[in-house]
Image (cartoon, rainbow, N blue to C red; front, top):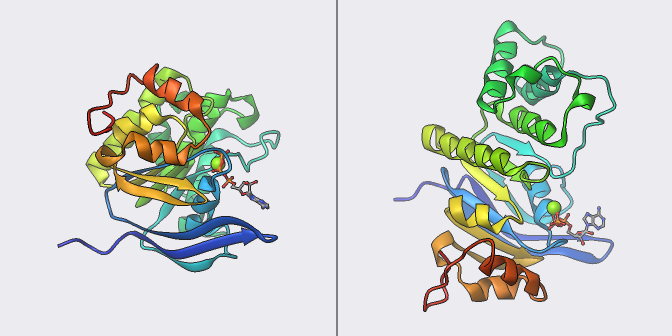
Length: 252
Ligand SMILES: Nc1ncnc2c1ncn2[C@@H]1O[C@H](COP(=O)(O)OP(=O)(O)OP(=O)(O)O)[C@@H](O)[C@H]1O
Ligand SMILES: [Mg+2]
């Protein structure tokens, strides 16, 4: 018997100034799933994520969430010129747990240290955020999302600004979180290599949901429907991804 979904989206529609951005979206995500969201630029991936985390509220339909969410945004909402140290930025991830008036305690600083260590950036603890490299900054943002021990972790294009070893490290961390804590992960990415390697389910989004399937069941036609004009993608797919397509058009 399957549990209730941790995220449930029913008949979701969202428009800005008569411009329909998301149409008739239905899906469920269950605890412990590792879900990839793929789709071309402007497909509405970040918008969908912002609706799930509650940043956008002017939609119609039903979005039900059962758990605490940690979120790594695609574009940074933090002003990096603002004088702030890394540990202070990561502590912001505990803000909801601690509340606006209470003070952070020793155990919270300890948690920040631990999470920075897991992400291999513990030496950045006291660094000014304006002095970080792009990749370091992203890891710190991931630490901020993880420090409150969320049930659901949502990452919007976390591979941006991270080199290959950094990406491998990130994937290993995500895998470990899933294995050890059964955390539910949603990964928005243009890196199909990463998506096909690690996720268990994929949402193909281009304003509406083109497919929502087990990763294994996604076929080349699903991708062609999704990226209608992006022929480059298939060159990439067959080249650097070393994708193998079997006689049923399945990718592995
Ligand atoms: N506040 C807004 N007002 C008007 N249009 C918006 C607004 N926010 C997003 N859009 C539009 O909605 C569409 C979806 O944007 P979104 O950022 O969700 O795409 P995305 O799939 O995340 O793309 P990318 O892969 O480039 O990050 C785009 O056409 C965008 O221009
Ligand atoms: Mg986006």
